[in-house]
Length: 337
Image (tube, rainbow, N blue to C red):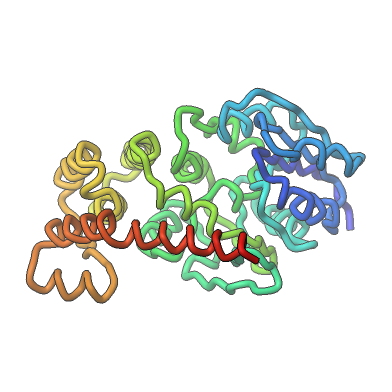
């Protein structure tokens, strides 16, 4: 089979010494051989750089820069790439050995569209993979229809690493927004989709997504991260509504904002208020709050905001100290051993 199209795999690397070797091996072992690998070391403080250098991979270029963030590193890697097709890859994820080949073959059916494959996730051990099924696992003539289906289904993914991107689409859409720290994938993918002639699904192209690291980030949400999420969703909303300002799209974004309102309240009141104003302008949300058994019981008697205030207070005064105590006890037991 002819492999004339070069694929540039771009990896932004930051403190991924535990994962980067497995990630790179999964790229090196691809059945599609016309690949260049560009790794941008974003000022890692661990041994990530040395581990990449020791591998001595012929078609790999390593660039070392001061820490500037994932978006800046991805843009820098893109500027150094020469492939007709681009695939961004996180430094802790793994792709199946024929993933890129399957995506390229699907792309050949329509060179003016984005292509994605299946994504499955694991926590630490890839031999224990959680299979993921999604309603969006199919071809779409309309990229915006795919986008709405993603927004309406909580299990769907919208990330930069999921795509095989024609350079022609990237030139029209533009690179990563370097002002964003979280939800940068969401905003970036939105612009890609707006410039894509439909969406192609490569059924057997599998991406193994390492779950848990981003959960740690969102669980320790600070104002900077919360503002980045708000900005990313707002920019995506503004771009989309220029192309399709319809009731279905307005509701999809109202629900997207509402999801984050439930997540932010009551810790980030200023951002919550801004989001609620946008939800009102969009015509309102029909997304109900979700929680565990305690939340459901309290929400039966009280408004959801009051329930969130109670849960937040319980977390700070009871659950958080207990977790700290358990952690100290575990460390003491390990030390005693």
